Length: 254
Ligand code: ATP
Image 1 (cartoon, rainbow, N blue to C red):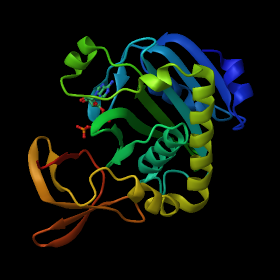
Image 2 (cartoon, helix red, strand yellow):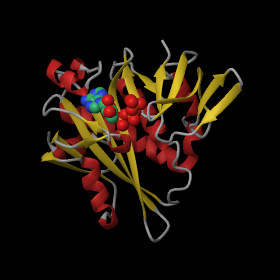
Image 3 (cartoon, rainbow, N blue to C red):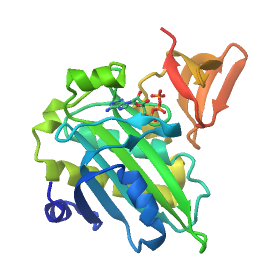
Image 4 (cartoon, protein in one colour):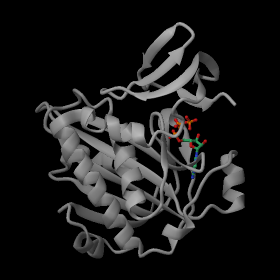
């Protein structure tokens, strides 16, 4: 992958860096956040210690996946950023849809293809003394999934071999443009501008689901999409409840 070419192919006006290998692009940008002057996209050809939520890991192999992070500054700080991972999911899913690859979203932060996880999103933040905040939006997207890696992950996962054959720089430029548009819109209007779009892409609308907290069932009901702040709406026996994305995992009941 070539940083200059990605910049040329993108209309976002964001600086791009490509490294052959690193532990985690999110960790790298988080460490640099206090010194960053402008948004930057960091792409790793190979990420050796990819991270998911709550210390979980994201596994990938060089050439077979995209692993990258985008640092973006929010002038208003951390306030109102709760729905950001969901808005990023919308941006990612819509960009893939435009490339002819329809995908769905699973609350709060996964992109699914045919029911299996295709991409993960990890948003981390760092508040600045001037009241602003840097957000680091990390994405891991499977292009090809070798059997051995799927076995290591320990569950059935999805890949997108069609995208693997596409010009990688053009693919990253398209993803960068989609993310930059979404981040700008989110800064102006918050998650409310994305809620209807998220619900159109919802993988499990109307399906029976359980909400797990460290393996324990917290709630069960029918998944009814998200509200204007990104909370999951769950129709339970006791009525509709709204769930905030903490460290909870959603599973289908069947
Ligand atoms: P869950 O999917 O259980 O609700 P989560 O959304 O919090 O969890 P993340 O933190 O986004 O998951 O991602 C980490 C999890 O993704 C890992 O625990 C592993 O199960 C799974 N995983 C790791 N690598 C990959 C990969 N390349 N493709 C798909 N899934 C992966």
